[in-house]
Image 1 (cartoon, one colour):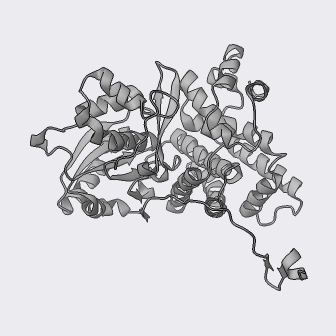
Image 2: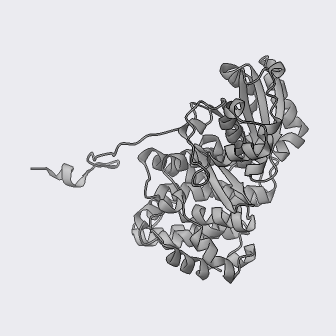
Image 3: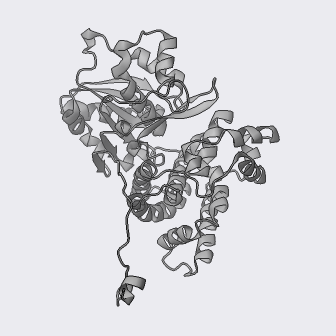
Amino acid sequence: MTDGFERRGLTTGYHTIMPPSDVDAYDFLAPPLVRFGAGRLADLGEIVATLGSRAWIVGGPRSLAAGATRERILSSLAAAGIPGEFVAATAGEPTVDQVAAALARLPLAAADGGLAGVVLVACGGGSTIDLAKAIAALAPLLPAVTPAAADLDALVVDHLEGVGRGLQIRHAPLPLVAVPTTAGTGAEATRNAVIACPRRRFKKSMRSPLLVPRAALVDPELTASCDRGTVAAAGLDCVTQLVESFICRFHRPLPRALVLDALPRAVDALPRLLAGGTAAADRSAMSHAALVSGMALANSGLGMAHGVAAALGVALGTPHGLACAVMLPAAMRVNRPAVAADFARLERAVDPGAAADDDIAADAFVERIAALCRTAGVPGRLAELGVDGGLLDWLADNSGGASMRGNPVQLDARSLRAVLASIA
Protein backbone atom coordinates (compact mmCIF):
# COMPACT_ATOMS: atom_id res chain seq x y z
CA MET A 1 0.00 0.00 0.00
CA THR A 2 1.35 3.43 -0.92
CA ASP A 3 0.61 6.80 0.59
CA GLY A 4 -0.17 10.01 -1.32
CA PHE A 5 3.46 11.12 -1.38
CA GLU A 6 4.58 7.94 -3.13
CA ARG A 7 1.81 8.18 -5.72
CA ARG A 8 1.71 11.86 -6.58
CA GLY A 9 4.67 13.72 -5.14
CA LEU A 10 4.66 16.01 -2.09
CA THR A 11 4.05 19.72 -2.66
CA THR A 12 5.89 21.88 -0.13
CA GLY A 13 5.96 25.62 0.24
CA TYR A 14 8.98 25.75 -2.05
CA HIS A 15 8.73 23.06 -4.71
CA THR A 16 7.34 19.64 -5.54
CA ILE A 17 9.39 16.69 -4.36
CA MET A 18 8.81 13.81 -6.74
CA PRO A 19 8.97 10.20 -5.59
CA PRO A 20 12.04 8.23 -6.63
CA SER A 21 11.92 6.44 -9.97
CA ASP A 22 14.13 3.94 -11.70
CA VAL A 23 17.08 5.26 -13.72
CA ASP A 24 18.26 3.01 -16.51
CA ALA A 25 21.92 2.06 -16.66
CA TYR A 26 24.04 4.47 -18.69
CA ASP A 27 27.58 5.50 -19.51
CA PHE A 28 28.79 9.09 -19.58
CA LEU A 29 31.83 10.05 -21.62
CA ALA A 30 33.52 13.45 -21.44
CA PRO A 31 37.06 14.80 -21.69
CA PRO A 32 38.95 13.94 -18.48
CA LEU A 33 39.91 17.61 -18.22
CA VAL A 34 37.87 20.66 -19.19
CA ARG A 35 39.32 24.11 -18.71
CA PHE A 36 36.84 26.84 -19.54
CA GLY A 37 37.15 30.58 -19.41
CA ALA A 38 38.51 33.70 -21.03
CA GLY A 39 42.29 33.65 -21.28
CA ARG A 40 42.64 29.92 -20.64
CA LEU A 41 44.67 29.46 -23.85
CA ALA A 42 47.61 30.44 -21.66
CA ASP A 43 47.21 27.06 -19.90
CA LEU A 44 47.87 25.07 -23.07
CA GLY A 45 51.54 24.36 -22.38
CA GLU A 46 50.84 23.18 -18.85
CA ILE A 47 48.16 20.78 -20.09
CA VAL A 48 50.30 19.37 -22.90
CA ALA A 49 53.21 18.83 -20.50
CA THR A 50 51.06 16.44 -18.44
CA LEU A 51 50.43 14.31 -21.55
CA GLY A 52 53.73 14.33 -23.44
CA SER A 53 56.88 16.18 -24.35
CA ARG A 54 56.16 17.76 -27.75
CA ALA A 55 53.17 19.07 -29.66
CA TRP A 56 51.95 18.50 -33.19
CA ILE A 57 49.54 21.33 -33.96
CA VAL A 58 46.59 21.02 -36.31
CA GLY A 59 45.18 24.45 -37.13
CA GLY A 60 42.21 25.99 -38.83
CA PRO A 61 42.48 28.79 -41.39
CA ARG A 62 41.93 31.49 -38.76
CA SER A 63 44.13 30.01 -36.04
CA LEU A 64 46.97 29.60 -38.52
CA ALA A 65 46.53 32.98 -40.19
CA ALA A 66 45.91 35.00 -37.02
CA GLY A 67 49.40 35.86 -35.85
CA ALA A 68 48.27 36.63 -32.31
CA THR A 69 46.64 33.23 -31.76
CA ARG A 70 49.52 31.38 -33.38
CA GLU A 71 52.03 33.18 -31.20
CA ARG A 72 49.98 32.61 -28.04
CA ILE A 73 49.92 28.87 -28.80
CA LEU A 74 53.65 28.67 -29.34
CA SER A 75 54.42 30.94 -26.40
CA SER A 76 52.37 28.87 -23.97
CA LEU A 77 54.00 25.67 -25.19
CA ALA A 78 57.49 27.19 -24.98
CA ALA A 79 56.87 28.40 -21.42
CA ALA A 80 56.25 24.77 -20.46
CA GLY A 81 59.32 23.55 -22.33
CA ILE A 82 57.23 21.96 -25.10
CA PRO A 83 58.40 22.31 -28.71
CA GLY A 84 55.48 22.84 -31.09
CA GLU A 85 55.24 22.07 -34.79
CA PHE A 86 52.33 22.78 -37.16
CA VAL A 87 51.67 19.54 -39.05
CA ALA A 88 48.27 20.03 -40.75
CA ALA A 89 45.65 22.62 -41.59
CA THR A 90 42.02 22.25 -42.55
CA ALA A 91 40.43 23.50 -45.74
CA GLY A 92 36.71 23.09 -45.14
CA GLU A 93 35.21 19.96 -43.64
CA PRO A 94 37.77 17.13 -43.56
CA THR A 95 37.77 14.57 -46.35
CA VAL A 96 39.35 11.16 -46.76
CA ASP A 97 41.88 12.70 -49.13
CA GLN A 98 42.81 15.43 -46.63
CA VAL A 99 43.29 12.94 -43.79
CA ALA A 100 45.42 10.67 -45.99
CA ALA A 101 47.51 13.63 -47.16
CA ALA A 102 48.03 14.82 -43.58
CA LEU A 103 49.15 11.34 -42.53
CA ALA A 104 51.61 11.23 -45.42
CA ARG A 105 53.21 14.50 -44.31
CA LEU A 106 53.71 13.64 -40.65
CA PRO A 107 57.35 13.90 -39.50
CA LEU A 108 57.67 10.28 -38.46
CA ALA A 109 61.32 9.62 -39.25
CA ALA A 110 63.43 8.30 -36.39
CA ALA A 111 65.53 11.44 -36.62
CA ASP A 112 62.39 13.43 -35.85
CA GLY A 113 61.58 11.29 -32.83
CA GLY A 114 58.84 9.20 -34.41
CA LEU A 115 55.73 9.28 -32.21
CA ALA A 116 57.54 9.42 -28.88
CA GLY A 117 55.99 12.01 -26.57
CA VAL A 118 53.70 13.47 -29.25
CA VAL A 119 50.53 15.29 -28.18
CA LEU A 120 48.10 16.51 -30.85
CA VAL A 121 46.84 20.05 -30.31
CA ALA A 122 43.80 20.99 -32.42
CA CYS A 123 43.11 24.72 -32.55
CA GLY A 124 40.16 25.61 -34.78
CA GLY A 125 36.53 24.80 -35.46
CA GLY A 126 34.89 21.41 -35.52
CA SER A 127 36.49 20.48 -38.83
CA THR A 128 39.95 21.10 -37.41
CA ILE A 129 39.24 19.05 -34.31
CA ASP A 130 37.80 16.19 -36.39
CA LEU A 131 40.88 16.17 -38.64
CA ALA A 132 43.10 16.04 -35.55
CA LYS A 133 41.06 13.17 -34.09
CA ALA A 134 41.55 11.15 -37.27
CA ILE A 135 45.29 11.86 -37.25
CA ALA A 136 45.54 10.96 -33.56
CA ALA A 137 43.73 7.66 -34.17
CA LEU A 138 45.54 6.60 -37.33
CA ALA A 139 49.11 7.85 -36.81
CA PRO A 140 50.00 4.95 -34.46
CA LEU A 141 49.05 2.53 -37.27
CA LEU A 142 51.33 4.09 -39.87
CA PRO A 143 54.40 1.91 -39.16
CA ALA A 144 52.44 -1.07 -40.50
CA VAL A 145 51.18 0.76 -43.63
CA THR A 146 53.09 1.54 -46.80
CA PRO A 147 53.18 5.25 -47.71
CA ALA A 148 51.40 4.60 -51.01
CA ALA A 149 48.40 6.89 -51.49
CA ALA A 150 46.04 3.96 -52.05
CA ASP A 151 47.09 2.33 -48.77
CA LEU A 152 46.65 5.55 -46.79
CA ASP A 153 43.23 6.02 -48.40
CA ALA A 154 42.24 2.50 -47.36
CA LEU A 155 43.53 3.09 -43.83
CA VAL A 156 41.14 6.01 -43.46
CA VAL A 157 38.12 4.45 -45.16
CA ASP A 158 38.44 1.14 -43.32
CA HIS A 159 38.04 2.93 -39.98
CA LEU A 160 34.83 4.76 -40.96
CA GLU A 161 31.36 3.45 -40.12
CA GLY A 162 29.43 1.75 -42.89
CA VAL A 163 32.18 1.76 -45.52
CA GLY A 164 35.39 -0.15 -46.07
CA ARG A 165 36.20 -2.99 -43.72
CA GLY A 166 34.59 -1.47 -40.64
CA LEU A 167 37.72 -1.69 -38.52
CA GLN A 168 37.39 -0.59 -34.90
CA ILE A 169 39.81 1.68 -33.05
CA ARG A 170 41.10 -0.54 -30.28
CA HIS A 171 44.54 0.97 -29.75
CA ALA A 172 45.34 4.15 -27.84
CA PRO A 173 45.31 7.20 -30.12
CA LEU A 174 47.83 9.97 -29.62
CA PRO A 175 46.71 12.25 -26.77
CA LEU A 176 44.63 15.13 -28.11
CA VAL A 177 44.01 18.58 -26.62
CA ALA A 178 41.09 20.31 -28.35
CA VAL A 179 41.01 24.11 -28.44
CA PRO A 180 37.83 25.28 -30.22
CA THR A 181 37.79 28.67 -31.94
CA THR A 182 34.09 28.56 -32.82
CA ALA A 183 31.08 28.09 -30.57
CA GLY A 184 29.05 25.39 -32.21
CA THR A 185 30.08 21.85 -32.98
CA GLY A 186 31.11 20.69 -29.53
CA ALA A 187 33.71 18.46 -31.21
CA GLU A 188 35.98 19.09 -28.24
CA ALA A 189 33.75 16.73 -26.24
CA THR A 190 32.61 14.10 -28.75
CA ARG A 191 33.69 10.55 -29.51
CA ASN A 192 33.61 10.81 -33.30
CA ALA A 193 35.27 12.52 -36.25
CA VAL A 194 33.12 13.21 -39.31
CA ILE A 195 34.99 12.57 -42.56
CA ALA A 196 33.54 13.13 -46.04
CA CYS A 197 34.47 11.63 -49.38
CA PRO A 198 32.98 13.69 -52.24
CA ARG A 199 34.22 11.30 -54.93
CA ARG A 200 32.48 8.37 -53.23
CA ARG A 201 29.51 10.49 -52.14
CA PHE A 202 29.53 9.73 -48.43
CA LYS A 203 30.04 11.45 -45.12
CA LYS A 204 30.76 9.00 -42.31
CA SER A 205 32.06 8.97 -38.76
CA MET A 206 35.18 7.48 -37.28
CA ARG A 207 33.80 6.61 -33.86
CA SER A 208 35.23 5.30 -30.61
CA PRO A 209 35.20 6.26 -26.93
CA LEU A 210 38.98 6.52 -27.37
CA LEU A 211 38.49 9.54 -29.66
CA VAL A 212 37.21 11.77 -26.85
CA PRO A 213 39.95 14.40 -26.42
CA ARG A 214 42.11 14.05 -23.33
CA ALA A 215 41.53 17.73 -22.60
CA ALA A 216 39.15 20.42 -23.83
CA LEU A 217 40.54 23.91 -23.43
CA VAL A 218 37.65 26.28 -24.13
CA ASP A 219 38.62 29.96 -24.28
CA PRO A 220 35.64 32.07 -25.44
CA GLU A 221 38.01 34.88 -26.43
CA LEU A 222 39.09 32.75 -29.39
CA THR A 223 35.62 33.09 -30.96
CA ALA A 224 35.81 36.89 -31.08
CA SER A 225 37.18 36.95 -34.64
CA CYS A 226 34.33 34.85 -36.09
CA ASP A 227 32.30 36.62 -38.76
CA ARG A 228 28.50 36.70 -38.62
CA GLY A 229 28.12 33.75 -40.96
CA THR A 230 30.29 31.58 -38.75
CA VAL A 231 28.51 32.75 -35.60
CA ALA A 232 25.15 31.87 -37.19
CA ALA A 233 26.11 28.47 -38.58
CA ALA A 234 28.05 27.36 -35.50
CA GLY A 235 25.48 28.74 -33.08
CA LEU A 236 22.55 27.04 -34.77
CA ASP A 237 24.50 23.78 -35.02
CA CYS A 238 24.90 24.05 -31.26
CA VAL A 239 21.17 24.76 -30.75
CA THR A 240 20.26 21.84 -33.03
CA GLN A 241 22.48 19.49 -31.03
CA LEU A 242 21.01 20.64 -27.74
CA VAL A 243 17.43 20.19 -28.94
CA GLU A 244 17.94 16.90 -30.77
CA SER A 245 19.95 15.29 -27.97
CA PHE A 246 17.23 16.26 -25.47
CA ILE A 247 14.44 14.55 -27.45
CA CYS A 248 16.53 11.71 -28.92
CA ARG A 249 15.07 8.22 -28.49
CA PHE A 250 18.27 7.28 -26.67
CA HIS A 251 18.46 10.32 -24.38
CA ARG A 252 20.14 9.99 -21.01
CA PRO A 253 19.54 11.91 -17.76
CA LEU A 254 22.90 13.67 -17.36
CA PRO A 255 22.95 15.15 -20.88
CA ARG A 256 19.36 16.34 -20.48
CA ALA A 257 20.20 18.08 -17.23
CA LEU A 258 23.10 19.82 -18.93
CA VAL A 259 20.91 20.87 -21.86
CA LEU A 260 18.42 22.51 -19.49
CA ASP A 261 21.27 24.69 -18.25
CA ALA A 262 22.92 25.46 -21.60
CA LEU A 263 20.05 25.94 -24.04
CA PRO A 264 18.51 29.00 -22.34
CA ARG A 265 21.93 30.66 -22.33
CA ALA A 266 22.38 30.00 -26.06
CA VAL A 267 18.89 31.16 -27.04
CA ASP A 268 19.44 34.34 -25.03
CA ALA A 269 22.96 35.14 -26.26
CA LEU A 270 22.90 34.15 -29.92
CA PRO A 271 20.53 36.90 -31.19
CA ARG A 272 22.73 39.58 -29.63
CA LEU A 273 25.85 38.14 -31.25
CA LEU A 274 24.05 37.94 -34.58
CA ALA A 275 23.15 41.62 -34.22
CA GLY A 276 26.82 42.48 -33.92
CA GLY A 277 27.14 42.34 -30.16
CA THR A 278 30.58 41.75 -28.70
CA ALA A 279 29.83 41.13 -25.04
CA ALA A 280 32.22 38.67 -23.46
CA ALA A 281 29.34 37.20 -21.47
CA ASP A 282 27.50 36.26 -24.67
CA ARG A 283 30.58 34.64 -26.17
CA SER A 284 31.06 32.68 -22.94
CA ALA A 285 27.42 31.58 -23.00
CA MET A 286 27.76 30.22 -26.53
CA SER A 287 31.10 28.51 -25.89
CA HIS A 288 29.63 26.84 -22.81
CA ALA A 289 26.53 25.78 -24.75
CA ALA A 290 28.68 24.36 -27.55
CA LEU A 291 30.73 22.31 -25.09
CA VAL A 292 27.56 20.98 -23.48
CA SER A 293 26.05 20.19 -26.89
CA GLY A 294 29.05 17.99 -27.63
CA MET A 295 28.69 16.12 -24.35
CA ALA A 296 24.95 15.77 -24.93
CA LEU A 297 25.18 14.35 -28.44
CA ALA A 298 28.07 12.07 -27.50
CA ASN A 299 26.07 10.51 -24.66
CA SER A 300 22.54 10.56 -26.07
CA GLY A 301 22.35 10.99 -29.83
CA LEU A 302 20.73 13.24 -32.42
CA GLY A 303 17.87 13.16 -34.90
CA MET A 304 16.42 14.00 -38.29
CA ALA A 305 18.00 17.42 -38.76
CA HIS A 306 21.49 15.98 -38.45
CA GLY A 307 20.64 12.94 -40.54
CA VAL A 308 19.53 15.04 -43.50
CA ALA A 309 22.30 17.60 -42.95
CA ALA A 310 24.92 14.93 -43.59
CA ALA A 311 23.27 13.98 -46.89
CA LEU A 312 23.03 17.64 -47.93
CA GLY A 313 26.73 18.01 -47.24
CA VAL A 314 27.53 15.06 -49.48
CA ALA A 315 25.18 16.01 -52.31
CA LEU A 316 25.75 19.76 -52.44
CA GLY A 317 28.67 20.54 -50.17
CA THR A 318 26.32 22.44 -47.86
CA PRO A 319 28.22 23.50 -44.72
CA HIS A 320 27.13 21.35 -41.81
CA GLY A 321 25.91 24.13 -39.52
CA LEU A 322 23.85 25.73 -42.29
CA ALA A 323 22.31 22.39 -43.27
CA CYS A 324 21.32 21.70 -39.65
CA ALA A 325 19.77 25.15 -39.31
CA VAL A 326 17.72 24.71 -42.49
CA MET A 327 16.40 21.35 -41.32
CA LEU A 328 15.82 22.13 -37.63
CA PRO A 329 12.37 23.80 -37.83
CA ALA A 330 11.02 21.03 -40.09
CA ALA A 331 12.47 18.33 -37.83
CA MET A 332 10.88 19.95 -34.79
CA ARG A 333 7.48 20.11 -36.48
CA VAL A 334 7.73 16.44 -37.44
CA ASN A 335 8.59 15.41 -33.88
CA ARG A 336 6.27 17.84 -32.07
CA PRO A 337 3.35 15.34 -31.66
CA ALA A 338 5.65 12.78 -30.04
CA VAL A 339 7.64 15.07 -27.74
CA ALA A 340 5.27 17.84 -26.71
CA ALA A 341 6.14 17.44 -23.03
CA ASP A 342 9.86 17.68 -23.77
CA PHE A 343 9.45 20.75 -25.95
CA ALA A 344 7.30 22.30 -23.24
CA ARG A 345 10.01 21.61 -20.68
CA LEU A 346 12.60 23.31 -22.87
CA GLU A 347 10.33 26.30 -23.40
CA ARG A 348 9.86 26.69 -19.67
CA ALA A 349 13.61 26.49 -19.17
CA VAL A 350 14.00 29.38 -21.58
CA ASP A 351 10.93 31.27 -20.31
CA PRO A 352 9.85 30.42 -16.76
CA GLY A 353 6.60 32.26 -17.47
CA ALA A 354 5.65 29.94 -20.32
CA ALA A 355 2.21 28.37 -20.47
CA ALA A 356 1.39 25.57 -18.06
CA ASP A 357 -0.34 23.67 -20.86
CA ASP A 358 2.20 21.42 -22.57
CA ASP A 359 0.73 21.79 -26.05
CA ILE A 360 0.77 25.58 -25.90
CA ALA A 361 4.29 25.68 -24.48
CA ALA A 362 5.54 23.14 -27.04
CA ASP A 363 4.15 25.18 -29.92
CA ALA A 364 5.77 28.28 -28.48
CA PHE A 365 9.13 26.53 -28.36
CA VAL A 366 8.91 25.36 -31.97
CA GLU A 367 8.10 28.91 -33.07
CA ARG A 368 10.85 30.35 -30.87
CA ILE A 369 13.51 28.22 -32.59
CA ALA A 370 12.06 28.87 -36.05
CA ALA A 371 12.19 32.61 -35.33
CA LEU A 372 15.82 32.29 -34.21
CA CYS A 373 16.64 30.61 -37.53
CA ARG A 374 14.92 33.44 -39.42
CA THR A 375 16.85 36.02 -37.39
CA ALA A 376 20.06 34.29 -38.44
CA GLY A 377 19.02 34.55 -42.10
CA VAL A 378 18.71 30.81 -42.61
CA PRO A 379 17.06 29.81 -45.90
CA GLY A 380 13.53 28.59 -45.41
CA ARG A 381 13.45 26.31 -48.45
CA LEU A 382 15.75 23.56 -49.66
CA ALA A 383 15.68 25.09 -53.13
CA GLU A 384 17.77 27.96 -51.75
CA LEU A 385 20.53 25.42 -51.08
CA GLY A 386 20.31 24.10 -54.65
CA VAL A 387 17.99 21.16 -54.02
CA ASP A 388 15.71 20.35 -56.94
CA GLY A 389 12.98 17.76 -57.30
CA GLY A 390 15.38 15.22 -58.74
CA LEU A 391 17.52 15.26 -55.60
CA LEU A 392 14.72 14.61 -53.10
CA ASP A 393 14.69 10.85 -53.66
CA TRP A 394 18.46 10.64 -53.20
CA LEU A 395 18.32 12.69 -50.00
CA ALA A 396 15.51 10.53 -48.61
CA ASP A 397 17.42 7.36 -49.41
CA ASN A 398 20.74 8.61 -48.03
CA SER A 399 19.75 10.30 -44.78
CA GLY A 400 19.93 7.21 -42.61
CA GLY A 401 22.49 6.30 -40.01
CA ALA A 402 22.85 6.84 -36.29
CA SER A 403 21.24 10.27 -36.26
CA MET A 404 18.03 9.14 -37.98
CA ARG A 405 17.80 6.11 -35.70
CA GLY A 406 17.66 8.50 -32.76
CA ASN A 407 14.79 10.56 -34.15
CA PRO A 408 11.69 10.30 -31.92
CA VAL A 409 9.41 9.76 -34.94
CA GLN A 410 10.82 6.97 -37.06
CA LEU A 411 10.67 7.83 -40.76
CA ASP A 412 11.08 5.52 -43.72
CA ALA A 413 12.41 6.91 -47.00
CA ARG A 414 8.93 7.60 -48.35
CA SER A 415 7.85 9.52 -45.24
CA LEU A 416 11.09 11.48 -45.16
CA ARG A 417 10.73 12.40 -48.82
CA ALA A 418 7.30 13.85 -48.06
CA VAL A 419 8.81 15.97 -45.28
CA LEU A 420 11.58 17.18 -47.57
CA ALA A 421 9.09 17.96 -50.34
CA SER A 422 7.14 20.13 -47.91
CA ILE A 423 10.11 22.47 -47.54
CA ALA A 424 11.52 22.08 -51.05
